[in-house]
Every structure is written in structure tokens, then in C-alpha cells.
Length: 148
Image (cartoon, rainbow, N blue to C red):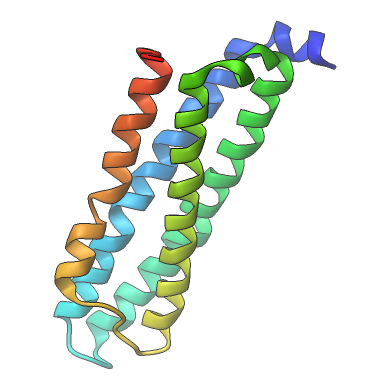
């Protein structure tokens, strides 16, 4: 199996990167929708629209993209297990695990927003809007520059 995966490694890598882009785009947009919901009237039409948008974004884009990122990442490791011994990979993996935890936090928060709660403050969500991008910077530098 690893020989087959090695023969299509670049296709797996390309698909992995495409899914990372989709995942991160959604992860940067969802907290912005939380900000907009904070600004909307409780129980109003705008709030209902933001709740629907959050649900569709998470279930239609963010969740499938994250799953694909992990599956494709594992396939790349099977095809090229030498990566496991590279120090840059350990830092990258730690940030991917961290952003996956943020993903879970966003999903949990989305359920609270859907239930009519407004967890955290608008300012908090404005700050959280930047977290995926900051993690992405570290991840990309580790993968491209391989400083360690």
C-alpha cells in the first residue's frame, strides 16, 4: 500500500493543501459570524440567519475539510514515514492538534449560539478570529522552510 501511496504522493499532498485552505477559510469565517450574531437582535431574523449560516459552514465545509486534512495527512505519513523523525513535523503536528481543538471549541460554541446563548464577548470572538491564521503561519513555515 505504501508503494501505491508513494506513487500518488503529490496528488495526496495537493488534495491535503486544498482541504487545509478550505478548513482554514471556514475557521476564520465562523468566529466572524459569531461577532455578527452578537451584534444582532436576540431572537430576530438576522440572528436566525446567522445561526443557519454557522450550521451550514460547520457541517458543510469546516467539518468535512478537517476530516479530509487528517485522513490525507495520515496517508502522506504512510507513504513517507521518514517525516515522523523530522523536528519541524512535531511542531507542525502540535499546531494542527491545537487548531483541531479550536475547531472543537468553535463547534461547541456554535451549539450554544444556536440555543440562544451568546457565549463569550464580541471582543473575544474578534480575537479568536485571528487564532487559525496565526496557527496557519507557524504550520506553513514549518512545512515549507523546515527551520528545525
